[in-house]
Length: 263
Image (cartoon, rainbow, N blue to C red; front, side, top):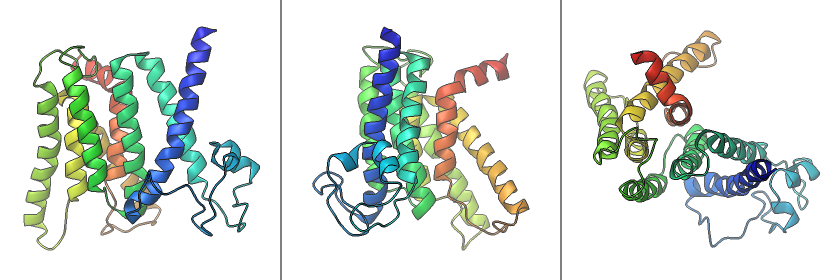
């Protein structure tokens, strides 16, 4: 019974945080404050009441429409809330209540915001990178007192090497690619910068695993999109969503994949 209540509590927290992540996803690319401005309809500007702010429930009761102007509300809002709750409970199952759990849910929250902003706008704002970096530094300091299973060992330089290796590899790809394709940006600056805090939170082994999985998923999805003629070969596909997918996979299955590979 206690375990069920714990999972339910974490899921509810995930729904609430997912609702806040929706605010970040919409406002950050537009330069709006995520704190001082009250929640409102993006169509008519009507301030949302308490009942309108209940995650998932309010969307279903309103049938996906604003009670003020009747405008359609994107299903993304409910999707983000459910996705956040799902990731939170998944990380609880894997790590239990531990420093690793809090590190994983923090990074998962950052990645959800990165996924949807980069997918829609093709950017990863610096404010997200800075927030992730601050969180990474906090967990790095905590790891001196409470060793983290995410890092895989207790070597203090592991997170630093993870931060440098992730960003360094993409930076090298960007430099080499820009010399080959002189007028084309091969890798976005946001992609390079976001790997720094991700590496700081994961350590170098999971960082390399995350980057490998990101490239693998990006290649697979791109091939499918090209085959179905949704995009052509010259189209630019944002890499941020694939970084998010690869990193979540690395957090969840990274060590098992490494054991299979090296075993």
